[in-house]
Length: 120
Image 1 (tube, rainbow, N blue to C red):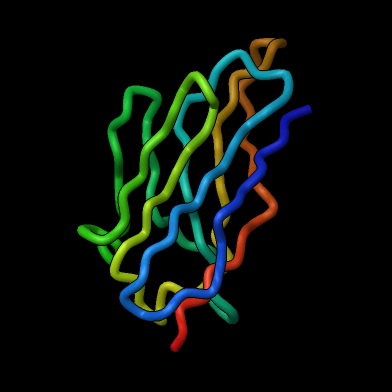
Image 2: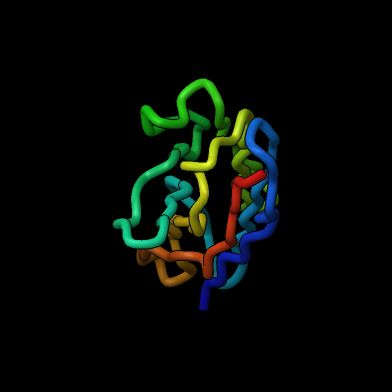
């Protein structure tokens, strides 16, 4: 069993910053790509950023220059530093990980989501 536990969501004013964290635990040998997605009310879930095991990031155009994804492989944790937040960043943010399990299978997992609200 694998769990992804997110934290860090909050209400923040426009222009503010937040840092999201997502820790993976369970029967894991390793983790390939990790990432963050978001879903705003009435919209489809969309990619925010992903990062490879080696640390290569990929960002949605809408967050480039404002958000930074990073990871700590020893802690099996991925982070999302969000700066210069805008009201349109308001959404539930979901962590996603491609996990190599102890049975050598690779499976994809989602966290439960954390709410980010940007409003004055």
